Length: 472
Image 1 (cartoon, one colour):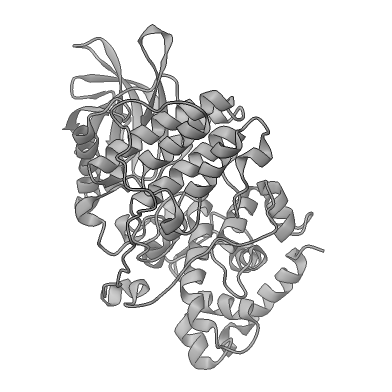
Image 2 (cartoon, one colour):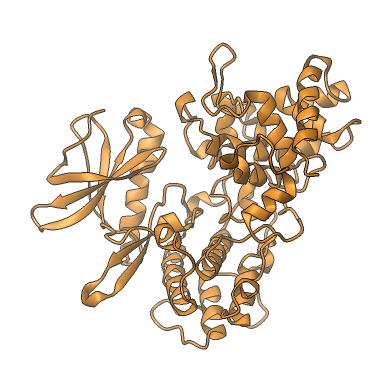
């Protein structure tokens, strides 16, 4: 596809960024003499009706919200080559991720920013929309009249509306900011998943880093943070959603009270009697058919954050799990730690993930083996990876060129956490049983009663590499 020069009446002046499904361009509205942002669906997804529908749905949700705390949509159309686009607010001051690259904000500014984000999320919730992917890069900044600044929430690409919240869900979100239930098959994330995301964002605003696993109170990182604020953030980050703040508004009110401020405006929280919280409902998994084997009915699968030694930084966690000086590439270590601590499961560890990647590809992210239909650093087959990618089957099956390390490595953790539960009674080394299940299937390992003979050369490699990567 050629680089567009215009979208309808809007001139395109430059490229702002690209994701897996769409690109965003800086544009100009000649009729209003005003800058705009233009989001255009990527060319290779144009013929996928389901992807087009989701792209248009995002524009409709943003238009429906029609709030200055959310990116606003002004127009929608289609390029001559068939690619749909929509026109939205231009964020001339970039993203919150870019702002936080310089370090944490002063506590007062951090809390004011958090409150604006919280109000925007509550507006979504009032419309029955759960965002599911709150993170700094999805918060945009725009200059306001009089020298102020406006905070806007963007990217409803994996948002779910009220009519979809009760349907079967697959893992979706961004590591570091998504609630534990979002890593589960049928975790059925509701508004409290966004409360967790708000807690993670507030933690990042206050400390300069997303929360560790397990999270540490922000006041332990910066003494200037009031203890009550720290306590409110930690409750938002509780792995048990029944113990989190019941709503974004409740979290915002707690932050305001703890910081000695008054929270005003149209989004004042709707009060419920003290101590009264909505009771959770157990959801039964619906059978998803043979093609969705990952969604076997009635399986109770709980993913818990790994309870490590409370290391505060990614570097400390990496040293805890992977031997310094080994050939595990530095650029993949954070991803490996995330995958290896995705859940508490006997045998699963970052050491195992690193060893498997070494055995699978030698850490080559560009590996391509069309004869076996396996691609990337973890040798995923595209139609299998489709179940374990962020968003699961809510997102299209990735093409081989789209199977990056950032997609492949976390998916290993999701896969092993789900199928590993079937291996609990299988004799032998739990780590090698997991590696064998990845290379064959959990059913095969259970039926064999351990590592099948045909994959023993592979698991022996994994064992040797684990010895090399285990901290000493």
